[in-house]
Length: 327
Image (cartoon, rainbow, N blue to C red; front, side, top):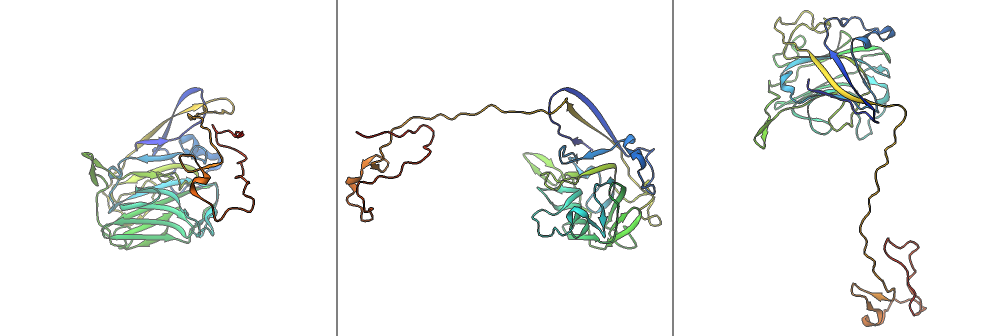
């Protein structure tokens, strides 16, 4: 994992903070209660609307491919999930942006492109999508429930060989329970070196808790994040206990970020900007760009009944203009 972006405000002492994901002493996936928030002591990332934190990896190809892999995310969310629908999204199908991103690979602005993967909370349920050149395939969880401020483990599995679940190529588990699966045709396409720009290869990105545009922000606490390159035995033991192959690739990451702390509120007032203005006299009796008098253009057939009336002077003249009286 390359970086955690965690913007802060104010000025003061620089401090260093390290978050650790995938530690061996983390509780297993069957322990979903977080009494007294014991997992915070083991490292967690708090995502709020203020800090807008997001986990980013610049090359998703180092984690998995579009045809095979798995991602496990352990979250604590401020609202409940009922029948697969996150409470703040209920009834919001008419919005322009409806989804809150859990994780995704090969994002553009707010959605993925091919080849890519997408997992999000939507008004219709928990969506998991895999998009390869053979087509875009999605499964939707419309049955799972989770309490607010209580740990929930979401595990997304995909395998083009049909080993995700009983011959299916995609599966989604919530707290160890199979909640959705599908058998869309997937191609095992790489997520690195997608094309070349300015002589350098471009890779698919990997984002957690938001899209790159920061328009799909999911607030909450993320306590554990695991990515697997191929089918294997997850430490939680929740996903596919009987159908896992022994081969597995597993990695750990230490996520560093720097923030600035300060006492009290900090107000930043930028310096004002001034534009150059050149004064110019304007004769309201004149018309046209050269200031020619009105009589040059002949009689106006649409003139008002009072020939001596003049145009109304604007209440607020632009900067650099002033009203003058003619002799």
